[in-house]
Length: 294
Image: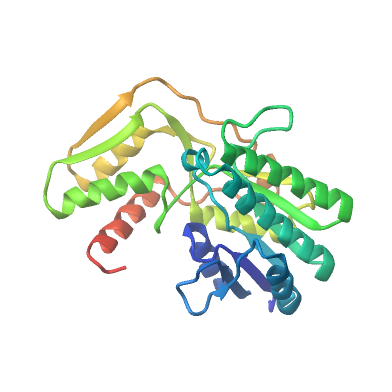
């Protein structure tokens, strides 16, 4: 294939899986990180426009997968400017570097199911930052013909250092398993519903969008099935064969955000990894971390 792909946020939860997948598919991968721990990862602060231009101009990638950013809605309330800078300005620097140096390259930016249309006010600064990012993607595609697209996944799960609810629950369960204590899990609302999709399925979708997607289009990605946090805990209980005591604050039903997968399915993508397989892999990962094996 001999195609080059630059991946930002390469040492993050999704980034590790993305680097692994694209290498397996024969791409030459250039991983970027702000403060890399791996010697193979290229250091780059995406807020420094000149540094971004330098790397993009030197590497001349065929594709850019922009995974870097901040994604915690709760913490965004106390750091709104930082979220805007990290999620918006960094994205703008990438788009400008592409426009000026590699106009034929294809770029995929990762949005969020929590972003809003321009007619609706976002619910928090994180949502605002992703809403602006999405608008910017469409604007740069229309105004400058930058070959950029947007992927909008639901809740990503799977093995690795995630801060998502499935990973947090797995950490609690693992801690109890290691010392043979009664298992307790804390959730705010046990009936809250989410659409969970394995990060490895999402990365496959990202490749399809980069290679087959239409410029300026938004691609929604989900499993197509919502699950309550109660179902998640029951899944972990089945895997551990131990009762799990749940501590929660509320118990109201909560509907997930509806996702339209027409466009991503048209590219030939479908979710492949079973939900219980994802939970099993998450548990296995956190058990290995607890034992110092990972």
